[in-house]
Length: 253
Image (cartoon, rainbow, N blue to C red):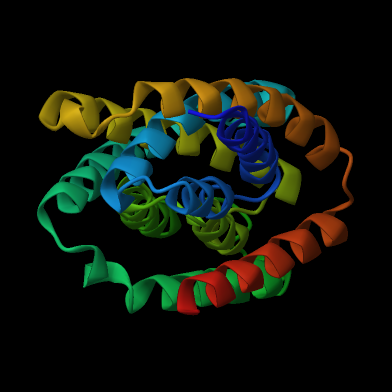
């Protein structure tokens, strides 16, 4: 591995850790970088998922104050993220890569729509005396988190946008708290998928790549948390939308 390759993967990890903490879609930085240097797609995807766990941990820690009041909710959602991630990881190992290509841009577009309309829909729900998390909304949220977990276990790019869009509609809480919950659920998804990959198909893991992305994303997670927590709600939503649109373009081209 040349010094250029080491530096590029390390910097991609930093950038991905920042983006994942603030928005999601960091995989759209690291995954193409690995493909550029000639790594096989499945191996690159698996090694990338493993490496980004470190960035998820540092990003979630950076948002610990925002998440603290909602730990009970996280405990209810975590099993759905775990189960969904296992399903997605296994699908990655048995299905052709083209299987999700058609639906992924649609899911991201839907998530962006939910992010934009989330505040209005939440206000409407509050006007209907639904400003608390009812049983029906909790069930819908758990189902959505399960689907996002499966998607995240399969590929991971923009799973954060899916989660933010979903929670923006169903949770009557501030966008920063939603972002913090998203980061914690993302750690669960990435770590679970990583363990499935290591157990089922360890030959696909490139540990040098994992280490480089882990070091970079760990630093990027801290940086992203410092930046994201200072963003006003409108700017955070705008950033999510911009990066989400870029993600759709990248995936479609």
